[in-house]
Image 1 (tube, helix red, strand yellow):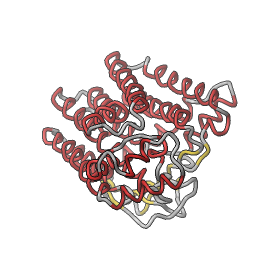
Image 2 (cartoon, helix red, strand yellow):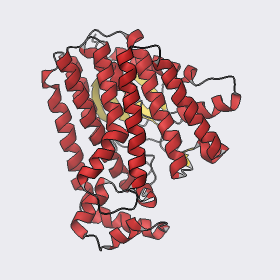
Image 3 (tube, helix red, strand yellow):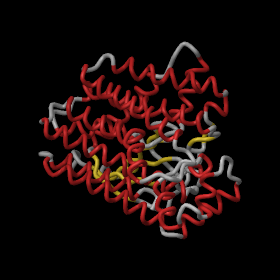
Length: 369
């Protein structure tokens, strides 16, 4: 029986057999098929879609260990602080960043003990950024669960986010010095990307290049750091580390663009409310593509520029973007960055690792289709 390489499919399941946390569930069937199931809108909803990707069994098992370490890392003597962190963790997520660390470790000599601190820290950095994002966006829910600032207030949310960031770097302090530099730079880029996004809110005179700089900082930098860290710590050859770092950056850009698409199409299946970017004045790729076609004096440009668009304004903007072909064009741009990412894999020496990374590339642009 094959055990080194299994399949997993992203879907929703009514009866999971093995529960890891309230939002991330693994279901093993006949020892060959493994489903990764996520909650939509806080509930375990069945999704009429199943996409299969290759992933090694040992990575899946090691992600369980990452999950346990994440829970342990956010516990403190302060009960409220622990509760707030655990609620955020249990709201779920794809755990894609720690998965990238572990999968990149396949390129060299895989050792979980070496990779685990970076895998955990990468998710904590991401988690802290989301907590702070929710404060900046005044978001009431995330993945169908009430945000910390909605439950305990803005000051508590900022403090919890700071705590989670601090935990991440406490864990990193026990790792390789170069890895600390890599992750610190990624965290700095993430902060700069968020600031850039705030500074350019409701500004319609932006180019795709302007957007890409923000995406590289806000999302792609951490993806790249995860791939670099996993491959470097596994002792991969320098050219393979460089290739996977580039892979991670391009994958991160594609991921962010497709997140922009999900903000427009929204819906129960995605667990995302539609139109949040329009409410916030965040100029994304679908909006840029639509504005390129419709012009700076269009109704869409007017709505995006509004300080406080109404619900009807948001609905109108969504319809305009959806009907002008901007969604398909945005998906094409995302696919082009996945293609760039996959092209970097040509020089990777281990076929199993290449297969996994190709699958992750497909996942980024096929989720919720």
